[in-house]
Image (cartoon, rainbow, N blue to C red; front, side):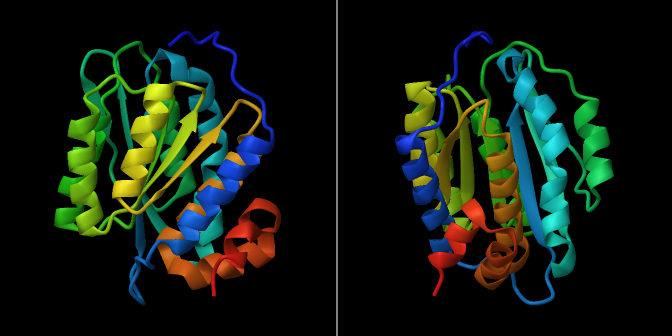
Length: 236
């Protein structure tokens, strides 16, 4: 995918997608038991087309930690793929600065998508210790969608919801990301280059859900308002 591809602007269709995304988050079963620290896997496509979004993500990921500080914190693992078959995972960290150090050391390289490896890693990791949510940010899909869906189904059985953030208009990616979200009982959201603030708030919302479940998400929505408040309105 060319880095020069023009991304869509927000409109009524995008607002509907956000509403649907928030409803899916609200409807996802609460993942965290009392006294348990939430574990969120933060996966990103680090191929060449992703470089602008990678830089933005380095700046906004602190929202995930800040939003969950009062809930006992959040453990986050960064997973990324790039280049020729390279797919790596960081250690689990509970500090925003530690995650920034890991992310800023990564440089995007051209290559094909490796979403299957990300999903498989999430499945392997949750069999060792529970992963409460998987966030994936990407713009393309160049793999066998049936293979991805098979692993996504296993994640769903393990109770690991995947929240799929899709940048750009790629129809193959949209189809695959939506099916992965559905099979894992997660959610799908398309965003564009002008959505940095919205992405920040939604990442924070998913992190709060991973750390504290629906009640924590309701409280967070009251504090943040706007897009996040729409989640709280869906929770009884």
